[in-house]
Image (cartoon, rainbow, N blue to C red):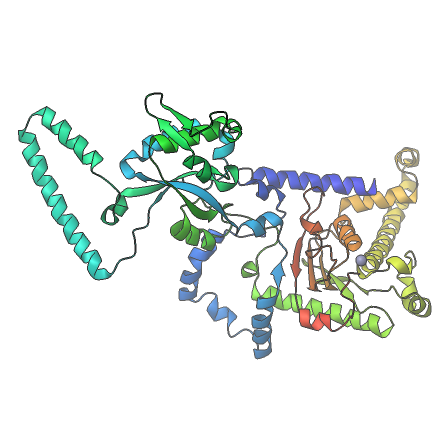
Length: 508
Ligand SMILES: [Zn+2]
């Protein structure tokens, strides 16, 4: 019951958020904090304007000391958000087949192709616009000028021809028009009139180029034929879409070429700008990252983060001096900047028996007294103590009231024992680490990463990666779709300072 209520409330929150971002891509459904992330498009557009007005710069630059500026410069090159796989794949390019077409024929070809290709095919590169203007070949400026002059002369000639034609018969007109069409082989000077049409991804039709060499188009039958053996297995195994594509290419005498294009929609405005103009026209939709990018984190916040990480390092040193692994953590309530709990790894059994931290790990075996476990254990003890105190206060009040009124019987029926009262208190507000930020010197192990999911923590910032860590290195538990809670994770924050404190590369 303790966890169920909290889980259901979280699910509700998550559903609400996914409804808001319904129009966006699938991936947006798994983002956590809509308010946290900014619109990249707006940001990048506004950035230069803001710096001109000086509203940001004037405040920021004189504000920080030399040491702070040094720290900010250093930290920004190190700290990284641990994003989910889709967000990382947002930079992958894929291979597609394209054909050159004449601009005036574009609509006709697109229509034909859309009738051939099924939805399954078309959805593959849906974020790309079907057509791209073919880049004109690189030529010297002088040559360009010459070409322009030639084009102008040609246009003049055409105009003259038109004037002449208007005086002639209709029959002559048609003949001349037809001859023009057939006389249009793609040349460098006409490159502007040639477009590239996206056929399909290479992964969907791997041997298209090879098959095309073995196929002929029969004009009379308006169909394609395999050269040689008509019972060819390769031909028979082709789907209707694939046969349609071959027919489309062969009947138009197209020559297939290959282009590299973005496999997934670009997630950043800057990347979209680059891809859209330099690679292939594509669609941009503002994306909300599972962990805000560092460019969206304020300098003030980074300096605050540093303070907390220094506290975590202090904890790690205390633990190390007591014979433990040298991993420390601090839990913060970001709304009030209150330090909620501090702790360190306590897995050394002998040390635990000798020192006062036995009080903190009274419910934990040293085997599982990893840093996250001890801090969560400490937090839960503190919360229960606090709840009990609040309960006493309320009970005292109620008892006074009860003496005056006789309502005791009814209340006893609904809620009897102490545990039930604790639950009702918990449900009113905080559940373990809801909305808290955790700073830890080393990437947690898989067990501790799962404990963080259960704790409902909002953000984790860790120093050094572990080779079997659960938040970025071995697994990315915080982005796991199948779990009912996700949180933000930053890695490599003050990595150098944190690394010094332990020897083992393994997670703890
Ligand atoms: Zn652990």
